[in-house]
Image (tube, rainbow, N blue to C red):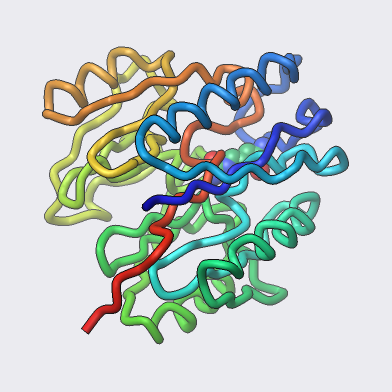
Length: 260
Ligand code: CIR
């Protein structure tokens, strides 16, 4: 069964970090309602949804994806690039310890889970303002023990690698060409986001289903035409905090079959 770790929206969400999005007022009550609908969507797709309590002093704590990288063999607790986010991982680590052995990224390294895209045994990591070379090197050393290859990817103009590209299937990527070069992913089929939907590349893949923000109807149509099943959720208030659908959960297999 799939587990999805989530966290309730912080009442201080309006004080979130913002890098490439202009600050506009956030309706926290509405954000909370949208987040609950997101949780229900994950449950309807077969996830056991676990919910951590809100962290009133940590505005960005709802974006649990950034504080850990969960693989079948190990969970890596990150050291987020934004200093204000460094305490968010403790409660997530407590929960993850029930499912995986834990490893930690140590200072001066930084890495955000939003920069980490795993496809098969390759882990692509965005060279972003949040993830530094030391972070990528430490991740590489940890995951090499389990047979993964790390591939750094250069990005521009966006927060994280997964703002620019996500996988809709193991051989097919949804990509924003303004922010990442398709040539960084040789051999993949590429679906570009609709040119009018700048932030549409960030989709959460649950099995064969792409969970994406409701406002990107034209990109959703491109995915459907390519045979991808799409579920949409309205996360407009979370998007004002520079979030989308991947960042609000850590999704992984509860019990991992032993590899031989
Ligand atoms: C931040 O800037 O850290 C948050 N306001 C947004 C984080 C979104 N994370 C993600 O997409 N993985």
